[in-house]
Length: 315
Image (cartoon, rainbow, N blue to C red; front, side):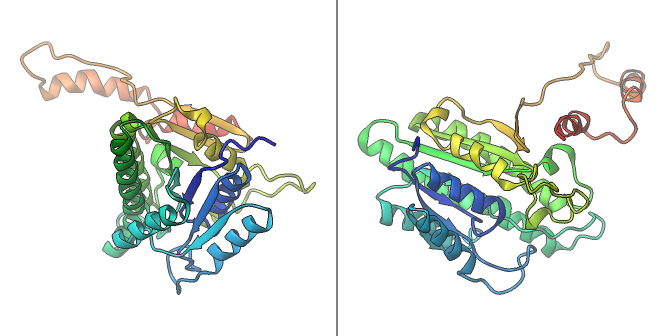
């Protein structure tokens, strides 16, 4: 069996359940030593007491399969704890090579009903949590590169969502956080490329505790086969992006689910209009833009048609 990650170390956040668990298992299967991070709160909204149980269970699962793993229960949204998390990997394995950011919570509400805390808590765990670990991993790689005068091995795989791409009416906090993660990733990719580090972001579609309501109406295969929405469909892409084979892939957004990977282009200009005078008047904009949007479906949001088509192409 090929072990492309042999000798490398990885930190996976939110790895006690669902996608993070599948990703941690895949990285270990490919040879990486893995620090399994999970704060361990039972509620998908971040409620309940923190517990070492989920992270310990996944770490034990990796070790039982012959791999190397440690559990970590730090809170990614806490700046100091995120630093300690990264430092724990370096202390145990000598360096950090791979960072997979996956931790998140949900506090869904329509925008006209959302509380300040519901907004802040989701932004804090998803977006700030991604930043916190990235900040300390990036500093580690930069320092190593400057010390040797050469590029180092570094991989970041962040987790966004199609809620950012197509919109999600009851998740303004979640959609905003996931959009911010894309911006963070592309900025990080530009900043760290010269040090040998890549940063990419995925939009996974999978049946997990976070999405149990979204996919409640979609039955699992009756024949006992692999669920098209299983996290195991996402994990191989994460393992690949973390590997030496993906060294030329940087600052990219990929949608993945059910045996399908789609590379998403950066936004392109669909149409362009120029004023025939010094600047636009209301009447001129009305004459140019109103007919243009009249040709599109009522209520369609930016880019939504393309994203929804992408989803329909995969059963």
